[in-house]
Image (cartoon, rainbow, N blue to C red; front, side, top):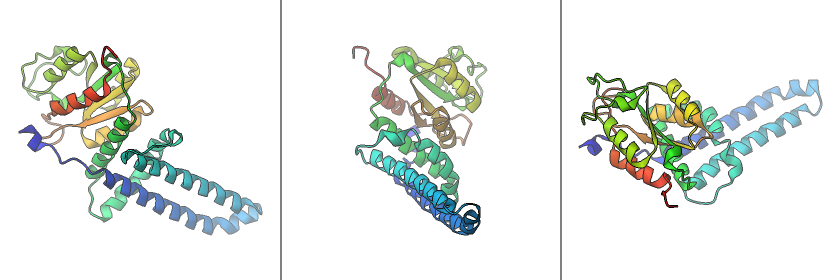
Amino acid sequence: MLKSLALARPKKRLFLGLLLASEFFVAAALYGLWIICCPGLENIFEYLPAIVGAFLIFVSTFSFGALCNMVLAVKGLPTLKLFHRYSFAIIKFLFPVSVRIGKIFGIKRRQIEGSFVAVSNLIFMKSGIKVPAKKLLVLSPHCLQLSSCPHKITRDPNNCKRCGGCNVGDLMKLSEEMGFTFFVATGGTLARQVVMKNRPQAVLAIACERDLMSGIQDVYPLPAVGVLNIRPNGPCFNTRVDMDEVRRVLDKIVEEKNS
């Protein structure tokens, strides 16, 4: 029942295609700006147009290289670690352009954000990251809790009575079984505070597309993987999560105790 309510898996090529289109658009805009500014730059210093032009070519080439690196990661091919560090910075810069280009073609922002999460998750998995359970932080949104529940769990999930009305009890049980830290956050600010306090080696976040995208970028370079929540009642109200999907992700990133 829940799986039928889940959104279709986002297409990774959507986000990458829009990023590449944004890259070419920004590069063309910078070239046009350089052409316009050349006479003024030359008046300041004879070689200034060439210096500025060389810098813009370097920035555009490096940015394009980082995007190609993401494509290689998605295809399962070898990548250059040089670009990993700057990938999310480039995404953050190009994302607003990608949204506007997507809007022209009738692509909703939520679709683009979901595609980003899919790409980020795949890169995470391809990197082969494995962490001890005690060094893993699992974050979920407060809307996962049943709205009628009287127990406050946003500061202490142990207050959950595990009545079965929502997935919080399932996650608490899984936390005890595997040994990871579980926390329910009311928003991005609290989530960042929890990350800083616990200093995990990796994060698994459960949220909507928008919150996952911002959260994954906020905690970078800390590796983070996202699981989309299920919204049978609309956003931010009595949401659910596919526990089979959560277990599948955890099995891939948690080190075995005897390893």
